[in-house]
Length: 383
Image 1 (cartoon, helix red, strand yellow):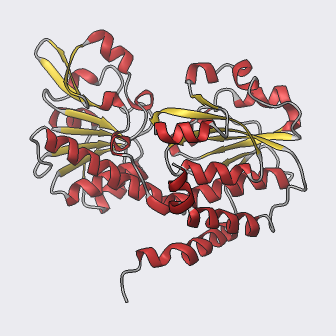
Image 2: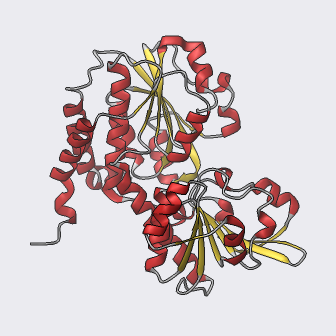
Image 3: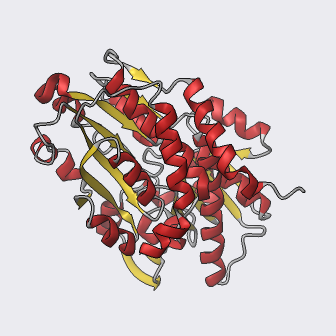
């Protein structure tokens, strides 16, 4: 692991050093001791990001998303930071989260992936007052969770940032790669398969386009009529959910907000394969499914669920399938991570009121310029 850090990540460390040196000209923390409580994927790209954050802030705890942990990375980072496996039920308890926060800090910030702190953050504001500087959310489904809880503190989101568009597109590609790999292992080609994508957001759209390129017949469903129009313009076939579930050979759950409720499950076409692009608790009630259907393991990644004559298959126990193959979006993840750092600096340096924010576009442009200087040649194959 030390070799990986010293060699492979030297340029990523240079990127963050330049970002911090440049962005801190706009955002000054003036020697304040600021603590961070972070939710993170414990994958290889977390290493330079967490080390960059720790050069500015004090990291009180990192809650590791349980379905995206590389054990070698976990071992390496655990020697430097306090890492705890994230448990949504425990994090919903303010006393649990509060127990990790160093009360001597001048202030603290939450950096979230997936809305883990959305239900407890207003309580943290009540308990800590001005010391709670605010929260930052990385994902669309997490952003929606915060909004539904009516935030009463400064809240930054990067889910809808132009810099994140690159990541969302590549995640769609990674998901499609994993899907194709798993189906090939089970003797299934994507060519000609009827695929239903529920949720035509940035990642769902990326998956739909990637599967279309693999000659699948793609249907889409979304509760947002604007996104339905987008799907028409991109050449897809919108369907109501019931028709999609009954017709699709393969179903991708990409809404981030309960794609399948329990009443939907009996409508799934017998023999269909179901996979998600996020955590199972965001898309399908696996607890209900396991209590009401019998199951048998077909392979390490595929489980058959059946009740009477009705049966279908769930991939990766309902969790995001791209993590199966060590998901990566290459150096494009650095753009989002740099924006997260910028949001944290903004929360410290600006006297912002209780509202929802996104970072200034001039900061995004600085991030993009530094990235282009260091990484553009890697992707430019034209001499």
